[in-house]
Image (cartoon, rainbow, N blue to C red; front, top):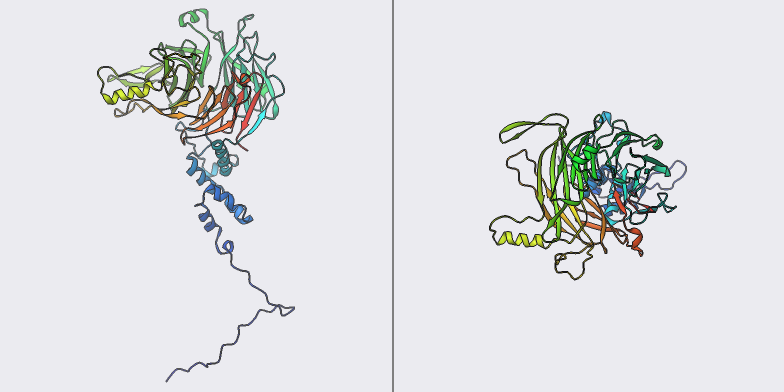
Amino acid sequence: MSKHRLSPAPLPPPKRLHAAGGSHIISLPGITFESALYDELILCIFSHLSWVDLCATQSTSRNWARLAADNELWRDLYLKVYGRPRLRGARGFIGRTDGREVRALPGRAKTEDHKDWKWMFRISSNWRTGRCSVQSSGDGPLFSPAPPPEEGMHILLAGPIIVLASSRQSMACEIHLHGAAGIKYILPCLSSRPGTPTRVTALCLDQSSPVSGDVRLAAFLSTGEFTIFHINHNHLACSIPKVTYAPSSIARTLRSLSSVTNAVYHHPLLITLSENFSLSIYDVSSGVVHTQTLTSFSSYPPASLVLSTPTSSTYKLVIAYGIHVYPQHWSVGATELVIAGREPTITRSSMLEAEHEPMTVISTRTIRSFDIPSGWIDERKLQTIRDQWSRKVSGISDTQTDGKWVVVAPAEDRIVDHPLVASVMYSPTTLQLYRLSLPTTASIASGQPKLTFVRNLHGQTGPVTSLALADGRCVSLGLNGGVWVWDLEAGTGAQVCEPSIDPVSTRKCALVFDERRVVTVGADELVIRRFDV
């Protein structure tokens, strides 16, 4: 039996949707890109965009603006562009000795630990481009009476607190604390020798994890004394001196004690470096106990100290300093010192086990950027010596290190028409960047320490008077007031402040920075440049 054929007549038209109150047609909503895709798919597409395109998509619609501001999206973008899970420029305690952060368990996560990755990306982008806001004290001199322009200044950043001190000689030294919301407090730093004029020669902050919420600050006087203060962040007026140390006359004679110019502090270890390049180690766990003094006759200021804790029982100190190059030139060198902690440390040397006293040096390693090998040399080594010789300078204005990089600022040349002033590559406006490599000595196959020249940092139009270096970021201050920022790992630089017309007022300025700001201080002005804008 054959199938029944359909009628050739056309099919009836489809039925229309009628409303209850009339016969008008109801149109169905059209399919759009947003309605056709889930939010997860849109986020997947957004993850392939650059940060410029991602910012442009926020002006398309409210829904896209909400999705383009996704925190995980900006987290992946931040790690891809900047490579670190935190803002750069941090000093002191980070959370782990290798620089990484420890994530809290989901049940223990705190809301205040939440990171705004888009905001962090914006801050890091401002650092790279030099975009910032400027705040100036400008309401009179910072110290009374105002110090002359040739007097130096000391400045530190302790979270929201700015610590200031003048190196002018006085009968009663003062440390100025500038807190948030314009709160100020003067901390007296008195000497145990009444009637003796003194001055503040160095300041340093404790880099260890704070226990009680207070920050330890060590202040050093020209008489060889130092005081450790406990700074209260919430109430600056509650800051008090906790430990005071005054060397005896016998100790001053035996150690030829001079004024401290650099210091680092990781409780309970305190290390000072004096003008005659004597390195003193103190144990301040209960009082002050001097444990060891080391002296160098081949190292010269300016110097920079970096202290870290590679293990729970050892400390590592890295010192960058100037070295003399015959006949009257200068270059840079670095020394690593491994210091035993309070727990006894066993090291293997010459196949013998030796027990070291706590807070004493276990081993040292020194590397120089200019080193002539002994004996006969071939053409390859001769070319290396020529390259090193071409980087010598007639003077060093400042040297800074963060344990990985070393930056040298040549001093302004004041000798005219002298055949031995410096090399042909010498320029007081050009910084020299070196890569410091210190392999661990745990393995026999570990390499030798190296201090390798990387490149010159151009940008400043005048001689550089001050440097600050931390976490792979370098900030320089010129005699003409110009401020430059360099990202040493990315190889980029940006001008933050143009040179001033009157460079005399910017002499003897101090410079410091953290993750969000650069602070410069002179004789009568405190300038804060913020990058979290």
